[in-house]
Length: 106
Image (cartoon, rainbow, N blue to C red; front, side, top):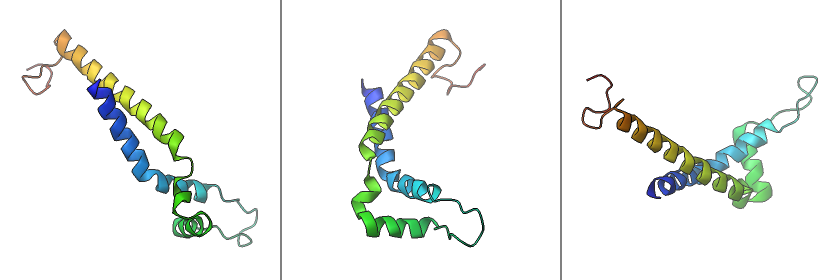
């Protein structure tokens, strides 16, 4: 139970810290594309960040964070568990050994 919890907590923490960057990225990517150049000026990341902060405040950078954190917790927890399970199977089958640093064939 400790391995999936550790994986889940690490994934949720990573998403919580980087979610504002994802909001800015989505804002930049969501801008309309102009058919002719020069008519519609696209905003860069800093301009998009300033616009988000002015229009929605600091909490606007975390809009929709709950489902993403829940997903990250589940995905990271299962990935950590799958990795540790695969490592256990490799050690059990003799493919690797914790005694030789995990190098095959020594």
